[in-house]
Amino acid sequence: MATKRQLTDPGTAPAQRGRRAAVLQLLRESGGPVGAAEVAERVGVHLNTARFHLDALVTEELAARGTAPREEPGRPKVVYSAVESEGPDGSRSFRLLSDILLGVVSASVDDPVAAATEAGRTWGAYLTDPPAPTERVGADEGRRRLVATLEGMGFITEEAGPATDPGADAGAGADPGADADADGGRDQRLQLHHCPFREVAQRRPDIVCAIHLGLMRGTVEVLRTPLVAESLEPFVTPHLCVATLRRTDPEAEGG
Image (cartoon, rainbow, N blue to C red; front, side, top):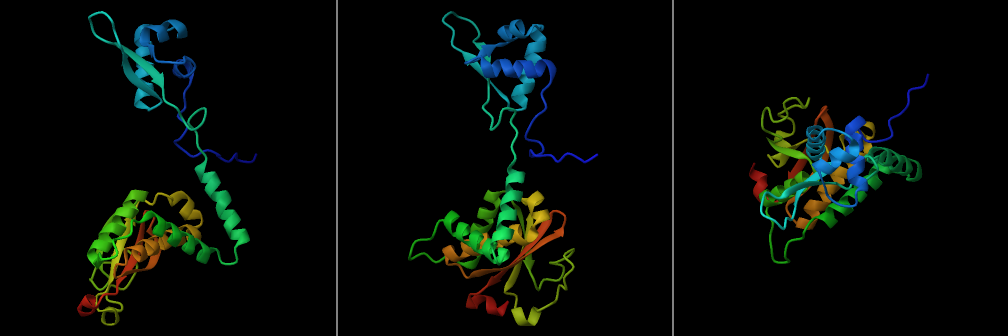
């Protein structure tokens, strides 16, 4: 028997069954906030049971808790309302969409990697605020702004030191002393953890990682900083990619 493919993204469709599903459905159809007592009566459960399910839905971010105004003295009435979701059950299928689009790129473009890199460069330029015409962005500041852009996308970044630093590439399978004389300490490594597109990148690293490299190149180009995003080595470990940045300012020549 063929295995059925999962078409929605894992974790985006909380499984609601039984009484909790009925409570959530009531909130969505009520047309406005309702109290726990009304929920209990309409669903046919004890008040404490209704409160238990309502609080669970708030924790799962499927419902919101608020208060209703009172005309007489006393504690305000606690009410609940449904939180709007992307789909009828909160499900999304962005991973499926990305796979389809990657297939379109692969089939319709002569050089998918070059096209992905250029697309990333264009978007990196678009997402980056350019400096003022008279502002000079040094290499350190440029790297800081690049890191801010990457972290804004969802990456967790970590400085790995210059490529000539013994041990800088530990675990990367590279010779720590390679090109030390040729580079003069101009190459620096940036470790990228928690790739926001990891599931898709694992299937098509050639295209997805090319987009990330292009994003970095577009960012440093707009900043007019003395940095070049030279390369991106994907999945050095299952959760780590390593980018190489090259300083191009004369101050870097001496190491």
